Length: 110
Image (tube, rainbow, N blue to C red; front, side, top):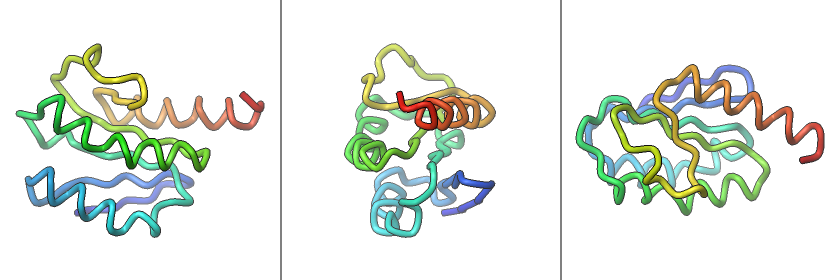
């Protein structure tokens, strides 16, 4: 697992290639990241299923309840199939843009 911090955002990337163990590591170390916006970088996976993506939903809901952004980055995926409770985008740049917009919305009280 590779963790990069850029300002108020942490990008977490899996280096093992196992989505289940990656989710367990992120969940286990969540207290370390909870005060930051989180980007989950899954670009290295080519064969993710909707079920794989949905496994991040409890963590996403917990993080959003704390008024922080949680964005998953996946490529080559049917984004219409992803539930609205999850935020998923195809690139890291878009993930940072989403977080910036959500920060502005929170600052304005939306």
